[in-house]
Length: 313
Image 1 (tube, rainbow, N blue to C red):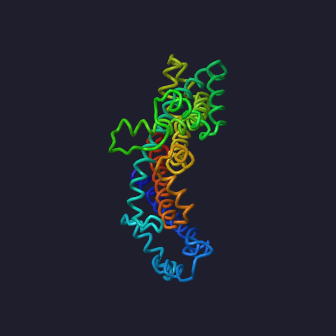
Image 2: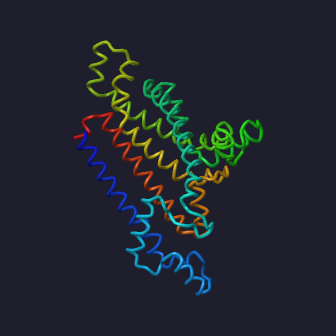
Image 3: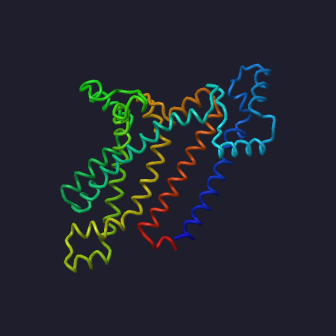
């Protein structure tokens, strides 16, 4: 297990290094002059030169990359050109929205998908299987932003049970904050639950056809016990993969939902920074999201080794 952990840690470090090179080169080197891009085509040359000096763009790309990478390791992401505030503080404020939103949406997706997938697999070809697969097809086909607007119309406009948007902040209390995150998390969770339920059903059906499952049934084990004790754990490898990918998507890809509900999260920060041409913020937030995705992937690999010890070799 220690050797497996060491190999995965080395792979994580190499992935982060390569990703940082790609992000830095794409945003600062490939498009041309970042200062001219930030200020627009009609900017005065003196203004562009002053911004280049402020951002340190006269230095070589290698020096700027080292300063940027070492700064991120220290937690110093630089200063936003648009807001004139430290980027680290802006990111910290947005993480308190995006991270709970992603965790709540993922928890809802798993809570819906696991019983749905188990029900469909245990009743293969029956009414329960058909019903679950029908609902999952609808969940995959319906865009989450359209579903989010339906949720707002029903629970915020008609029933007035939940707020239609905005985030009061955690200082206003846990309950008001969770109420503001409930509708967006449901809008994000249902399509992911549909995907996860279908993956779990397929994995369970493949596992239930194995010889050891037939042996367990021949020894007198009930179908329910066979499903829970033997089939579910061995079917969790593809499910864990999907859960890891879904968390990364929910953390980094909820831009549309955050804009629908006016949530000040990381996705909306990236969207606003791109619109205002604040490339320093885009560069730092994208790298932070890449780091989150790599860490989640690393955690999924560790979960693989726990679920199936054979993978440690």
